[in-house]
Length: 146
Image (cartoon, rainbow, N blue to C red; front, side, top):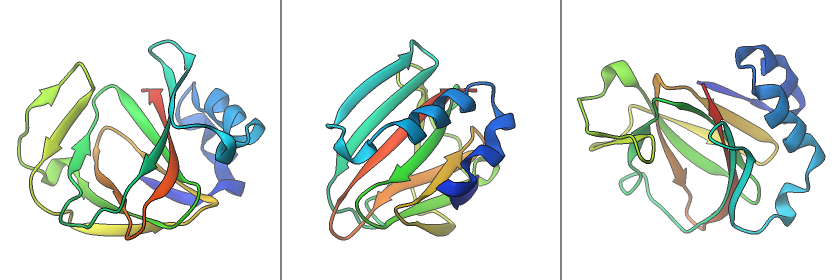
């Protein structure tokens, strides 16, 4: 997991061959103006999900992991809290390959606060419970093939 300010985004470009294209998109697009939905940048490799999320408590947030994609998550309109637990510390869970996701019961072991102007990177070894917010928010999740 990486948590950092958007001004440092390019420091992480070498971690994945597709990060450069994802970062180009982030830097060249008015993200707040995007309507909720899915934008395919590269079929099956680089996908932008624009989400409008309603209020969610820590108890309602489910931990998830992905096998095939890295998540780049950016809250746009408000602060978002995200749960975190290393995948190695999670119980076994059924993986759904059609959506590249396994969901886990129980609360996260740690929580991070991500403000607009920041981003979080979640790799396959990172269990994360996104979307914790008392009021709701608009966010971007870029799915990057690992």
